[in-house]
Image (cartoon, rainbow, N blue to C red; front, side):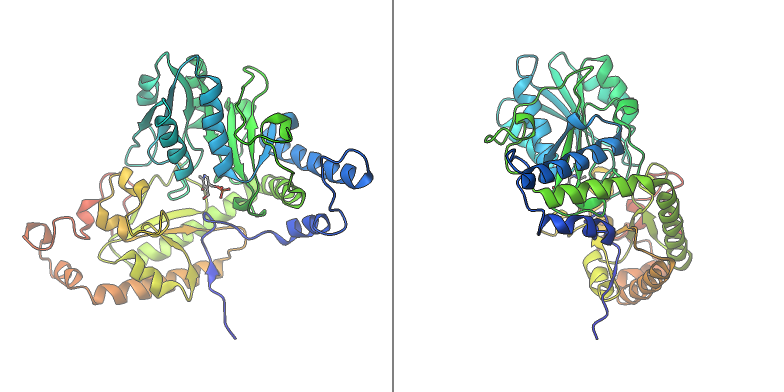
Length: 425
Ligand SMILES: Cc1ncc(COP(=O)(O)O)c(C=O)c1O
């Protein structure tokens, strides 16, 4: 019998919760109507299900149901937010501010807009992954129409100061968009209290299905206007045409409702699991570093660099036991080190030696114990094969040598940058 590896890559995607699947199933079979069919019960039934899901999502984030637009996922929501705002507000200005550590779908949308007459400011981040609010404010000009800063990062889980960003944006009359694909269901979100104008969400990050997402678009104070990016039957108040995928919408609604109901308890549980994992790993291995702030972070996320070990080799040694991502493989098919880790100032070698742990709803203490035991075993085995590790153990100062390259897997390339967060033992 093949035993499946533990799944601990919940920032990449989450399994559909069986309770959510149960709610979705009838909409694939007997309740198959088109939500836009106004002439018969099949259509009415589908429309009712869509509106129920819209209300569930709105309630999960403190919005009005009319402010929720269904899309195919956070990628589409982010494209619609950036391009939709840029087109409508062009008369006011053409400047957008975002951050270097955003998801590629924000960065690539920004790049596209740059090719079409927009000016984009890409804010840097501090070594802990947070933006500098003074730098944000200084970047605003009379031409600025939008600030887009992600709620929580997909690689390092770092949570940005969203309420403060919104306040700055509002005081300058600039719209504020946040990509909350990773945050929804893990961090309490109230778009009114936080002052968010547009917010992207995704079904498959919160134990709902893939291929479905939503965009929150504020209707009052201010009323945000958007240029549609998909034209057709005028669905979703004309902002996103296309026949609604009812089963997925129903699934996302149920998933959002369930995620926020159990939010506090689940966040505390996953935080404890993360602490257990970190303690077990750093208690038994030296030269392990935490990437990004531990304080301002999603409870289930951990991103670690293991000096003197190559991340891909580490993953290969682990993948019969646990499914994780590395800081080099997750961004693209190439083995470029993660641009997010590089933005924190992590050297190439330590970025290449990083692993992302995404602890989720179905992980247990036993998963943590098995994962840490295997990591310790594989890291020790790989380090034993490394001549650099041997030299390091003998106390040879590798920095003083002409060979190897100066920052080659040296812990000194990385620590001290995050006081209190670099775990060195
Ligand atoms: C922060 C963030 N934004 C956007 C996306 C894209 O979401 P989707 O897969 O729903 O298009 C992801 C998923 O990887 C993400 O983590």
